[in-house]
Image (cartoon, rainbow, N blue to C red):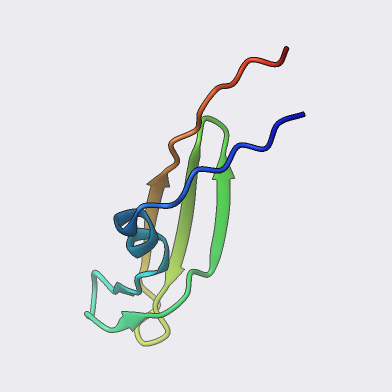
Length: 70
């Protein structure tokens, strides 16, 4: 068994941790209501605004490396 470690880039950390502004009222949404991993290497965040109830979805692509098992 081999351990493979890929350090996160600064831009991917910003995309993952950055708050989002509501597309309806502009209020800052701090944390997603729900997150899901989509097969194929994507994380989707679903947001709901506390102020107006507006919704938004963001996605982050993951750079997955395929490794051969020997």
